[in-house]
Length: 138
Image (cartoon, rainbow, N blue to C red):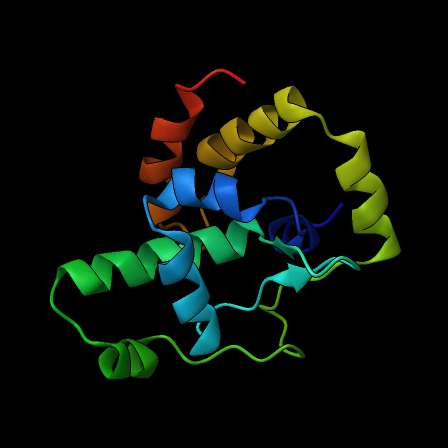
């Protein structure tokens, strides 16, 4: 599985994303409304988030903490459309993969992302934030 497919795979429920980011469901929905993230939707309309979504939410959170307003964030982080490469997707392959993953396997994926998730030689925000989540045993 390619790195980009893995990073865009719809894996995390909003509850898990709330734990990973320390954001409320309302904040996450607000950023979705402003097209800063585009989580995938199941047939039952449940939001599912990817590694890319979590990383982007952590970037948004860091900017908010620095005093940047939503208009400024939109300037820094271009809005994401449902058709863009950054949008989280649910495909037949991702549905099957998600069903195969139990909490322990998802935990392993998070750990692997922490250890090897560097993109373009940079340490991402997600690495520091996810390490806190990994201390929690499923």
